[in-house]
Amino acid sequence: MLFLMSLCLLVYNLGQRELRNSLKRIKIGIKNQLGKLTLSPTLRWVFQCFQGIHLLTLNSVNQIVNLTAERNFILNCLPSSCQKILFAFLKLKQTFESKKIIHIQRNSNCSSNF
Image (tube, rainbow, N blue to C red; front, side):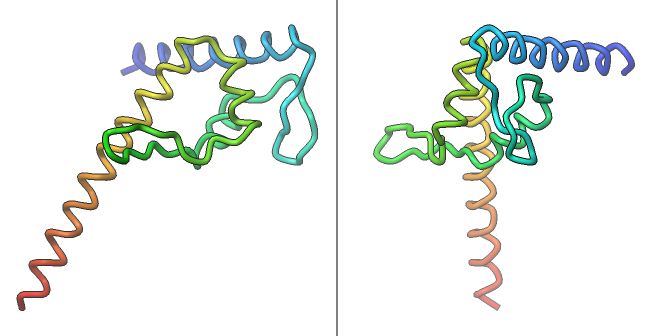
């Protein structure tokens, strides 16, 4: 368990360092929690910024919903591997949410029969 936790912290720290180096290289900051520009955001804050993004599938076409210009800028500051991970996570999140909706619909159908 200690090894796994250490590995997670290492990946977290490397991602944060990559983002900060990218922001310093282009000399543009992103807004922090107070709305002020910063060149050294925490990765936790970046994760919170991405909370509202969803993947929508209509007619077998995937579309990312709620991807603002600022979120897109942050995403472009990260390496392409991080972008692929985000899209994979969104797809996984969509799968879980659709199963949750199906489960709720089944439960509501069962309760309406009583």
